[in-house]
Length: 165
Image 1: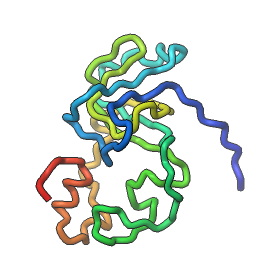
Image 2 (image 1 turned 180 degrees about the horizontal axis):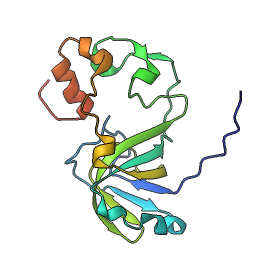
Image 3 (image 1 turned 135 degrees about the vertical axis):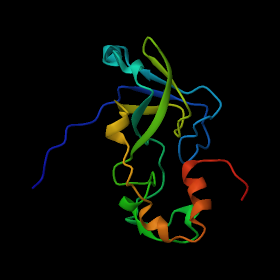
């Protein structure tokens, strides 16, 4: 059964210092100016958002130039091959990204955040509050990554934590 999907619209723009390269995941204490600029027509939708510490940022990965493959080899795994849906790869059939960031402050239609892992000018699709008891799963695991040699080192890469190789 085919379903008609309405077109997505951008509700704002994400501003970051990244113009050439960007990290694989948000870096919590990243330095620089990280802001989400909401279109003025959506500003009322920010009411009470500042009462949350974290938000989900949902965005369109607009600078993807790689061809989508259903089986990939994440660069940090030393050759493991997994399905794209079992990965956090940005190269997907629908180039939609999601990041969790800390709200620093909200001024008018601008949300100042902790580090975001996107290029400057990335189109914003949506925001959702990160709610403590709803969004934490204590029994979550590492899936296929459990079997990787040097798993602890690879998790540092996944989390974007600087370390010695």
